[in-house]
Structures are given as structure tokens and as C-alpha cells.
Image (cartoon, rainbow, N blue to C red; front, side, top):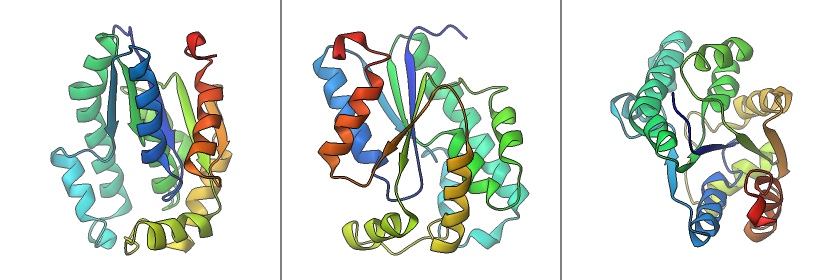
Length: 203
């Protein structure tokens, strides 16, 4: 795949502020004249919609079927959205990517490293992964109190603790771990310090 653009993935448990940080970074990059595409997983495609149905009843599929849905959704996402944008020289900011699959499906018993290896057979490796770290209790609090949402089947505190442990164990030269406990602007400043590696003009 011809790759002229840059891919930055935002990762972390639910309630870390990924969506907010993507919006803030996208605004800065666009102000600097860059073409930015923001996207998310699960997608709104055929497989992503099936995944979202699991928010209400995750037990309706086996862990193997769940993993297959995430892989199929990502293949479609890469083929239809990410790869064309990178080939066109855009900066792609994705709210979750295959590191989330490694953590969330890893917490159900799959081998996280095998999940990553399977994804990297077809999915572009991010130029940078912004891993937002917050305690599980804070993530749950933000989902419930700040968003005013009822926890879905992927956001229960017990399983999230296992997910957080896997996120903490993931390694890679492209991973940047950022304290997500501060206010949005405080965290944004930390994000900017890290992405300046990819965009020297931002320094």
C-alpha cells in the first residue's frame, strides 16, 4: 500500500477522553493546513453495526465470533477508509484500532499478541499510538456521570480492569502513554508534546 499520510490511533479504556482529544488535535492540524480524517471503530459499516448490538447483550455471541466481527469490521475500515486516506496523503486519526481488540478481546481469553499479529497482516501499523491512561474507576465515573450513560456490556468495571492490565502490558516504539486524568486542555497539551515528533512544525 502506498502510504503518503500519517496514521495516529487513540487508545485506552472507556472514559479516557479519546474522542475529545481527537477533536482537539484535528482542529490544530487543520489550522496548520493539513488534511485530516477522523474515524472510529467499531465503524458504522455492516460489521460495526453488529458489534454495537453486542453493547446490549455481549453473551449473544462466542468470544471467537466476537473477535471475528472486529477483524471483519477492521478489514472493511482499512480497505474503504484508512488505506485510501493514507494513500491520498491525509492524516488519519482513529478512535480505537487493533490495540483495543487486543485488550478487550484479550480480556475474554484470546492471546493479545496473536490478535495484534493477525491484524498487522492487513492493517497499517500506526505511526503513533496515543495510549490514554486513567484508573478504571475514573473511566467508569466519566461514562456514568459526565456522559450520563448506562454502562454497556463492554464497560463493566470488572472486565475493564482486565482490559486495562492488557493495555498497560502492550509494547511498541510507536506507543506514547499519556496521563488522561487531567482536564481536556491539560491532556491536549501532553498529546501535542508527543505528536510534535511527527509534525516538526508544531514544536
